[in-house]
Image 1: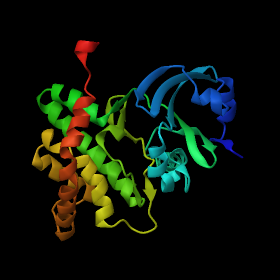
Image 2: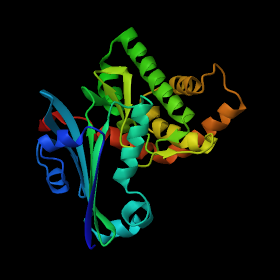
Image 3: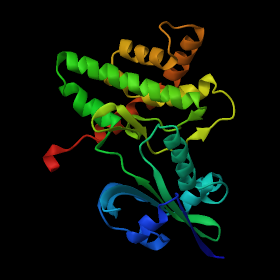
Image 4: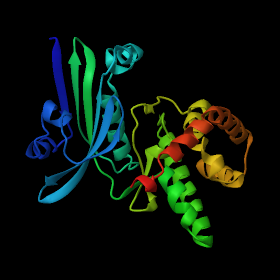
Length: 283
């Protein structure tokens, strides 16, 4: 066939999406309900509310499409023609992480449209997180406003929770691949309610993770950290991650690799944190 569409629903969700007229590809992909959270030239994330069993349910609809042939060529072996598509990988990763209680975002459905075998349009639907705030926004906007002891306690608790989540993730032999602050979300303003999101590059490894695999995720977390946390806080984070009180040879090697990988990313990730700041003058 020159054009084909495929849809997959999590158990129990097809009927709920049918009630909201989102059970087929075109209505879901062309949905203009709700509000746009993020948009680029070839993707959009939209927040949508639907009625489920008499209650309102918040969903996030992430859509991607092809705007130029270069996208197809550059991703030919990354799901555009060969291999699993990005939305298919992310759906499977979210299922894993939800089972492991590492995310509140439940995968609901995904859809793909292929033309002559090439992935042309796709979407992913997940449940929302209650009162979500990304970790970069929490660090940038909330922590600096906490006074004295509350601020110090808030910083320690956030770093402890991020270390815990990363440790559990890696203990499952799973790497996120894009473990930047914006892809960690706090629910209800409580750092203990931490969720991972946006993980199409997440990968389940067959063997225990090597230092290089761990360092890649940790470097993404550390990239903007020097502008917001003291060196002692960053060291404490790593000790919490490794569940040790002192650095041994393996810990020192991990730090070396983290710093080496983080250094080229620092300015770019700081720019991401600053770019996401609310622009009160335009409000």
